[in-house]
Length: 386
Image 1 (cartoon, one colour):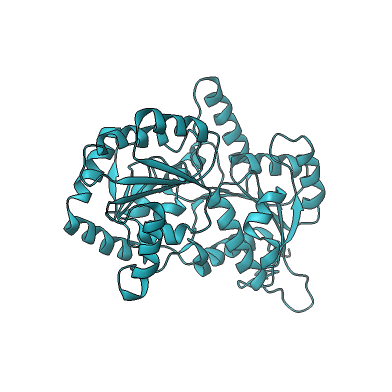
Image 2: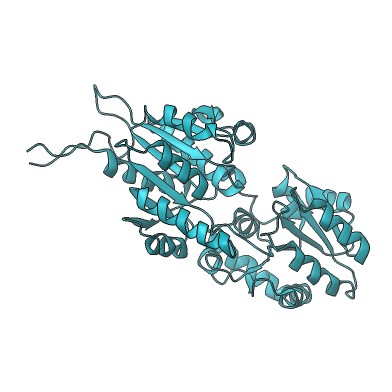
């Protein structure tokens, strides 16, 4: 006898049945995973799915999960012992739990221990660890991979990693760049020259190249490599200015280096006008990237700004031939790529055109939601009657 799904492919419950109840779990949450959960939540709610987002309160303030129709439950960051108990209480009412990131997934698995609630896990980043911590990381990944009904990896290498850690079912995830994160199309032209010139004037780059980097100031983002490369730009005329938007634990260390070495670099803190900053830039620089699908890389290609990025796993798959890829952690290669692009407007134009074509191949938000809903439907449909 064929079975009947309890939920339609569009998320709306058939007449007389309650809507699908899902819980989305975030840890501290990178910008990529938070933006993804907000986009996913918006699409799920629009399709009749009930969504509760478990995340620190500051994540809801920054990304507005409740603003797109979700319930929000404050769950402290991962080192708080009360977080698993809070999750256990919330997840007890769910038809399905979807955790984003390794630590969120571990806490969700602990909260669901002994319960028959499907767990979907999305891996957005490739975590790094050395020495004894590397052994612990592998153990955590194995625990999460085996606990999950399905692991969704945002790049092929993360899918392979999940399988190598024992995942029963690992699939490549469609992860869209949310519409709100897409800068406008080509920023050249009469209608955009004004704002672009104003932004450049505010940054002090009306008559010199503007290089743009964005990301939290932490040790996995490659800022040491970027500042090493900036030393080589001091001999260029006109002298480029590198502007870095973001905050984090390395702020004081980086600022001290900039001042001590006389580097042409400005730290401008966390900004909510990244689209405008990008539109004003000559080049976008991504020295390091733990995320498989960097938001900044996608924003740069959408904005038609030539991108220099590391050739780490996930990046070639994301950008194809639409960016200048250099070895990770190689300041000389990074400096040479930037210098060559500044001297070659034709190459920059070709990268802009390739970026536009590459961005058109990325999944849409509708496609992302549809894939996730199909996974939810597989895991929550009732068993066939005997």
